[in-house]
Length: 425
Image 1 (cartoon, rainbow, N blue to C red):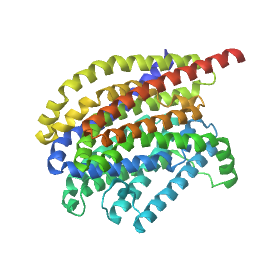
Image 2 (tube, helix red, strand yellow):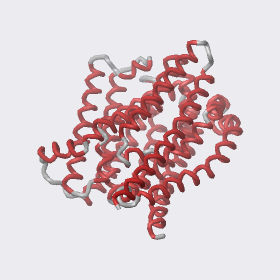
Image 3 (spheres, helix red, strand yellow):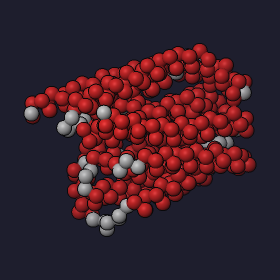
Image 4 (cartoon, helix red, strand yellow):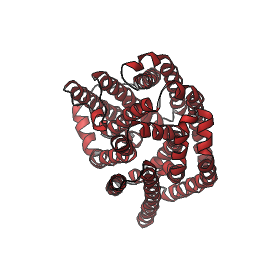
């Protein structure tokens, strides 16, 4: 009972903070969507997509090992390695921009070096925050995580309102710069909070080599798995931009931002606490992990199924009323993606289970399979002359099925861990 109460208390703190953060963004959206055009959101979606993809591998996924590490010096050196790797990726991205090889061009966007500078800075801010948040999870500093999210949302909204005047430089520039500023302010808060709590030992390269060896599976397999996971979620933006243009991508981006992002944050809140609890229990109490795993899936299904069914029916009218008639198409896209959103509500909170039970190879195979199915299906739809709606519907079905298959793999992995535990006893 005590463990259950602790889990719920931690979850409540994160959910409250994330809910308020999303409420701030949602409340500002009716104005934001009237001062920026769908094409601006298409370019901003490209920036967000590139940021997510780069973040997925820039730190070598070693921050995921921080909650598992018991030794303080080892914990800090894992952070050193992650930050160093992140800095290298930021510098390389800037180099591509200076040599006119901008990643934005992959999406068919004519860009300036300023976009690449903002992407590198945003990546650095977001990546350092991510590393430090894993430390905060390890130390149960959930209020600090919540406060940083709130600050990011508030400063993001204020900045995007204030920077509409620079949007003439290139489409979406105000949205991109506002996001970067929000992440920077969030980092400043976490860094200040962090310095008060943390002792920094001198850099020990021998220890760093030892840790790279100890957690090599995170660098070898988890990095690829996380990269492919991010690519699976972001590849649709690339495909829509290249095949159907910025306006379709902008409407799709608004659908994801309004519905998908809150779901992701809800899932991330539960997943953060789930990751912390399972990392402490999987070796000695796999039965408890199985109980928690089943409980989360059942309860999120009970909430998600009626909510997504109602949203699927009402989304077009809601988007038209809240954001303006020009955004009704985004609501139609939400209807098409309702199955995927349901699967995300249901499975995303426990989606890191294969990392926790040391099944990184299985996770990698799952990610590769999902990515191939997504890309082939959307490209074939376009080649056959199908509409963007058909491609988005295929994307939704493919993503939804893949999430439920992941849940099955997770169940089997925990069951296997339970069996090993009984054998040892």
